[in-house]
Length: 439
Image: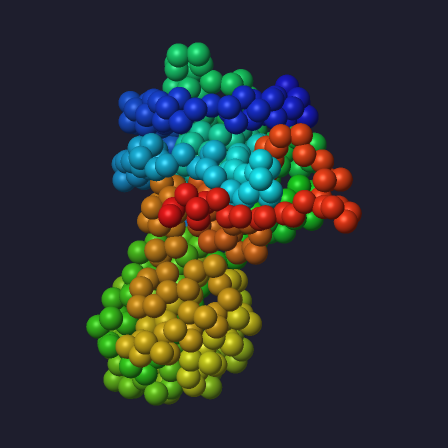
């Protein structure tokens, strides 16, 4: 089956999925979670093949260690995948919700109702646990999904797909054919990017190069983020213990993640002994620190540069440091050099924090918390298809709600527009019936 036929099949499946009730979708998620747990041995065996090939690629300089780190599937990741599916069962169905309900005139009502987007094309690199996460979100949101994984996770992706499609096929009545599919070649991906008649949204998850390629080669709407250049600003009132705890976690808990901090902005009024203690803690945790040559006295023991590329996303145990004077300069630096992903302020001053939260133009802005919280599972979305830095219908971690759109349902009793024009025109009431129902 070629890519065009695959996209057409997915579109036909999406129309069936839009009619699927909540009970059926939840039963599908339960079957998928059970199948993932039962298929652990097969998944680990497949992942081992991918890891062996990737290890050789790293040694040959053909793969970055950060990409290798994302590739590994372990018991914790697998447990989180199954738990995420079960969390989705407990979440309300995002489809069929009344978002607005208006009486336009007596006997004429307008209802705004959530519905699936239709067909998703998700192109991702390395992380094989992305596949089951997206598949489960697609099931709950009533969308069909075509997945294109990286060749580095070929065996793991195929193992996941077989386990999940077998689970869906085992349901009473089965599951729509073409609702979940996987392609491997770049040629297939390129052809799918031309299928704007059938595919409703493209979600690239991977490098800046991948995102830019997708944007330049499709007329289909694209949702995602190109970079994860996250910042933490340490204000003068930040306690050392809080700053150390948050900064070490944000950099070292999972340095390859897009929500790991890449730049620390340290206020010039923060005590030098605090700076020294924080740098020591980061270096003890294995972090290589980069600082401007001009700030050598402020940041001792770093790798110094005449100029630092502040847009850098390391994706590893490396971190840039910079001195700023006040929250306004910090916000300006972030808005200029950041990727509008996730940025945080550490301060005891509530007014200062409020300014930062309002001034920084990012999908996630945090006060006294690690940037690593930018995650659909941690937000309570069950899982995520990715993180969007765009200003479209979805921003930040994109879970169920970000995979829905809406339609308008107008119910009348034979009214025509002519009834509402002219000297004897009826009046439009525009009464909010949702508010009326709450009274």
